[in-house]
Every structure is written in C-alpha cells, then in structure tokens.
Image (cartoon, rainbow, N blue to C red):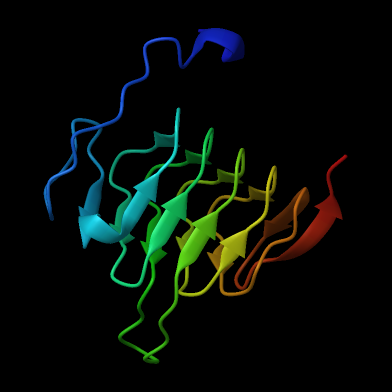
Length: 134
C-alpha cells in the first residue's frame, strides 16, 4: 500500500478503558487521551493518560511502545504531547512531561525522558539527538 493512500479508510478506534482496541493497543485513563486524525498506533502499545496524552494528526507509533503521563518509579507526572506527523519507533518508551516535536523521529527501542525538537531525529537510552531533519 502506498504512503499516499494508507489512511484512505482510517476511522477513529473504539477505545474502552483498559481493553485492547481493534488494533490491539490499550489505554488507561482514556478520558485524558486526545487522539488526532489519521493516527497509526502499533499493536501492544500501552498508553497511560492519567495526566494527559495528546496525539496529534498523522502521528505514527510503532508496536510495543509505552507512553506514560505518570511514573510510579520516580513519582514524575505530566502530560505527553506527540506533535503532528512525528514518528515513534517500535519498543520505545516516552516518559511523563515529554513533548515530541512536529515531524520528529524517535528511533526504535529508545527511552525518551526529555523534549524532542521539531524535525529532530533521536535514538538511544536515553534518547539523544542524531541530526536535524530538513
């Protein structure tokens, strides 16, 4: 399927508290999730939106990702914002209070505990800048 028509039949998923969607990802605190248009969230991704998670239009999130607005390990809390057209590689973890900028790319298996700039490419544990996209 070409990139230009991959979302032709996209529909908002039905999200039930703590249950897998038809695409096999799950949300806790669903009332604090804002889901944009034509988003793509991979199977087995977990989203904890207790303090707010905003996923803007055309965001792509790989499978097996974890997005946390609260951390029980260090008691950090804060909204997570994934800006328009950003891409999160599979098996990545986004921690509380992080904003991923427009068109940014997070490499697979990354741990993101700081904001990512617009058009940036980051990867690693913890995620570090690799380059600025044009």
